Length: 212
Image 1 (cartoon, rainbow, N blue to C red):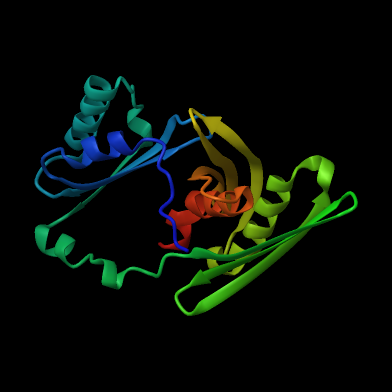
Image 2: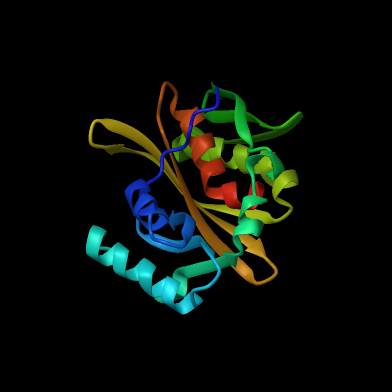
């Protein structure tokens, strides 16, 4: 089942998207929920620096978030160009289609299947139970995404934590590219199974890389 991933700062994204001349906004957070990247799609006509200042002002006034201008990325299009960017032209979003976890003695074995359109990608990993099931599941998910990502990715952190009355899987992943490592984070609400949530959190972290 394709469950929408949890966003740590959905209200901030909504406020930024409501700024005049901004068509869409996306906020990438770290494991602590702090913004580390802000991406906005804006109409042309206003200087990019002014768009950044608008983003900073709304974030500070409405949410008390002081954004460093260096983490704000602005892409500007004419209205005609923006209209051409439709969901139909986007790559299919990868989803977790199967999660299998087995414990044998002191060893945990995980197998993850990721589906992207009609294609499926399998990943497996094993480890000691003492190191934690979430880490093994996260490693298997990264193995499954290697072909889609085309880059090396290393797990930096993963855990399932309490957020009020809910359980949330959090992860931090370092994606190694030509310009060096790029750290991203992801999260997913635990619905029925923690392992499924961990796999979805990994996809959430890599979503912008996987879907273009």
